[in-house]
Image (cartoon, rainbow, N blue to C red):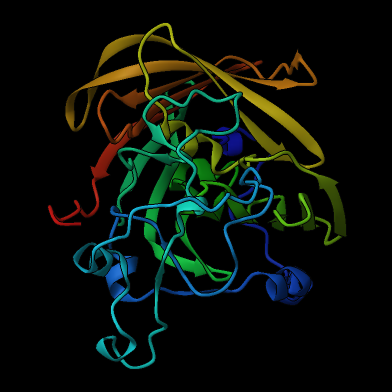
Amino acid sequence: MSISFLVCGGCASSVLKSGRSQEILKHDEFDKQLQVSELPPELSASGSGLYVLLPGPEPVPGASAPHPPKEKTDEPKISKQSRKKREPPPVEAQAPGKEPLAPASAEAVSKVHEPALEDGEGFVGRRPAIDPFQVGEKLTLEVSYFGVSGGEMVLEVRPFVKVNGRKSYHLVGTAKSNSVFSMFYAVDDWFETFIDYQTLVPSSYALHVKESKQLRETRCLFDWTKMQATFWDKRIDAEQKVEERKFEWEIQQYAQNIFTASHYLRNFQLRPGKKLAFLVAHEKENLTVTGEVLRREKLQTPMGELNTVVLKPKIELNGVFKPVGDVFVWLTDDERKYIVRIESKIKIGTVVASLVSIQPGRAPAADE
């Protein structure tokens, strides 16, 4: 996640406008390949419980290590009472128009955390033992530069959706400059991304950029059956010139995208001295994000004093660290690991995103 969207030169009082922008910036090819629909209410609202495999695709190939066929053994029979707990409700008991659900198979959820690059503490297979995300979560952060407020960033966890047949997290972020900063450079951007509930790998992201010097629509689709990402990008600049790019590249197993990376970090167990690593695929590059938990720190916020852990992430390409400036991230030192502060040092100063408010989202019921 980048917060440098507010650090721009130029002088303009409003976002760029173009009469044909919606038509020009459409991505029909992407839209045809990504099918997103609502889940039944009982699944879309719940933020905990066992993974439920919907009718349709098998667990994501390429994001799950292959399992050899199991030899037949004399396994003990399951009692009818135990079997009832594992079976989905009968079709007639569901609301009209709802698809019947089926539980995930035992093979679908490995208890060994993969890939080996990652720290598996606190995970059961690919799933965290305690899910840090809850539907309705909303974090608002003020973004400042040289101590001057430039606008705000909002990160949200929307209700679960079905993406190409699979239950998925729906994450959305917005960035908007305030009235004062907009006199110099106006920003009104948003992104959304989907993460598979079972394997925690992203299926796609969409980025909408509406600023003083550009209008831009970017899309990226991760095809885990082919281990391939496809990237589409269209841009209209201040001179009304249209630029368009499309490319594909091979991705690594379990890779995150640029927007899911900071959220994925919240799944790990964090304590001072611990070092973490995971993969990120971004615009033809397969990167490794490494991070060290530096310390615990009490942070003063509008929400009061919060106990936090401070991390310093770095980006590595082919074993060499990429110079992106020092970045520090503060997360709450609890099960939720909210992102409450980010500092990004650049050549001419430091950009800071600091917590304004937290809406924790829906806490799961005791029986879920």
